Length: 429
Image (tube, rainbow, N blue to C red; front, side, top):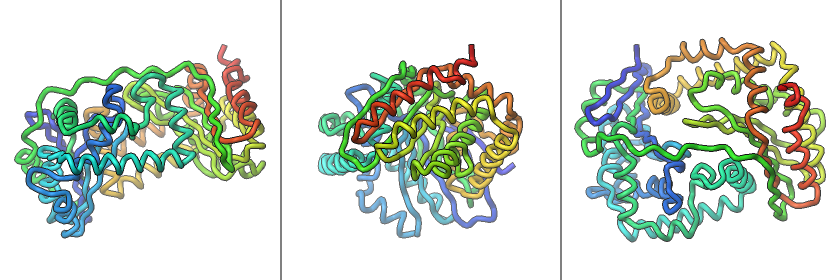
């Protein structure tokens, strides 16, 4: 088997997938900490810490960090999400030790120099400004607040200019020490790698992380639904709707994902065909499901002309309501094929494979094989999908946000709230 796992005494896990036909490798450090771990006074610190990791260490300047990797043709990056933060690199196989050295250095010995910190705060303030100029980002920020009120999961990952101003080097070091612990960290590598060699490098370089697990985040509680209209002078109306989904380990996760794909997962989906192809009401419409450790977020987004917003949302509600009871075998088969293709295509990318392995270790405590995952997809049938869809509509009232201008937005959210009393929901009783 090409996938191998080693757990070090510190609790840190090393997982690799050797892909002999490749000459390059993707590797990184994934930590089980993200926006949902932040206290109100720490809002945005996970993202700031990710930025600051590249701004100098005790042995390297910010410029030297990127120059060392790019001198061998590699690249270095990072990302913060609700539940994880990742630092990763892509290099030639001979440069795997260098990449691990740089990654360990930025996490074990960050300098958090005051001058670099102030400069990076300014960069993130510009990032916040750019997000506020992007309607897609704004509407989902409001939707998250509505779905997870007064909770870390309902706040933007970027923080605010006010919270950023309060952060200093001591706070960053404290957050790093508290949350970056061995049992909550995974070093994953895929491609031209040898497991024992990677383990030896990690054992030598990642020695400073505490073996005690990090504190658990606040349990998520999906809100009571409702609606919000955000008035802005925009050409389009941006409409979003969310329902409480399922956690990453829920047995009905795959059937619910199939339902999401049937509704709005591609050009053959019901919503795309009805709303765009037949009625010409929008350019973009999609449905997605984002599972987390203890909850899930089932969301829909579309943009349309403000005058068409009420009709758009009425059609959306009607399509969702009807789909629950009229799913077809052909739709189930098509959605399952899309899921399997996406899974297998990801296995051909060493970057996607390393990320998948890390995610599996953090969520399930072990890597899941493609055979196992495909078997779970194949097990989905029309009844399990229908049951997942019915439970979805029963689990929560919809949260609805409309962003734009015009009187049609208030009527649109009223139609969306009607999903709670739709005929599909009535069939549940």
